[in-house]
Length: 358
Image 1 (spheres, rainbow, N blue to C red):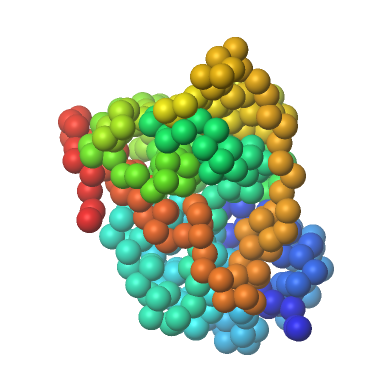
Image 2: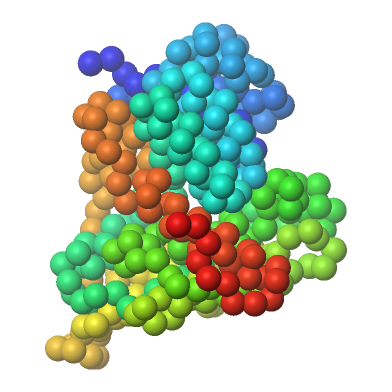
């Protein structure tokens, strides 16, 4: 069977480098092209993945027409996911979009409709999905170790999106001027910690809680008043089972993949039969149950194919015809987007808001 042909389109988000590395290292895939309107943003990728000039484009349509890929990886700014998805979908390819789903629920729905018309797959990548802690937590939940999930608590963040580049290479602390010049800090481009990180908690939280939707949402945001967007947000969602909390922070004391900050990043899940803490990059999950209220640790499961990274998973689904499931699916990510949209409205109007969208 021939290898899956992959292109990388739009390098706004530095995660493109990570995703292309997965493609480069996947024996069943081949990078046939990359495209960005700013050539300098592609230089590292072209060098790292041995891409000759014939595979480097500054026009996305030309890239897609000449390479005829099976799968396109998209990393545009959050508020332009819809524009780029519709443009690329017109070429009849499967699409993997880096998180968040979209800049708004309406945009997310338009993206899903555009790809559905072509009969191709659309997936939204949430990098936490592939971590051993997430895989292990979901297994324990499926096994009923803590019963029905009642409350989800998530704290997500890092030192900030400009502090590092692809492969988490440290660039250094940005100035306020650096931030203001970046799309990550521009409202019209979908910037802000809430839109960047809340989707992790709301989308994986929806995966963990069996697809439940909240009834209403309230949110507060804060940050440097010289910037257009937030750097810190706290969202509280009321479900029929109780309250859940989703916190985002650009500017944690340390990066969690180096040293866990305080408070730690990750999830605490409370159920009818117990609780579990699933901290990012931890070596084990801490569980409490009625039988063991003192708690015990569960070692991490090792990720196994095809669930080790999003590219491997997408190639598997394309080849087998299996649907996209879990946090990458349109269905689960849409619920996460509903909560995020509602939180944004709540913060803007300083009131509790009923869940937006049907």
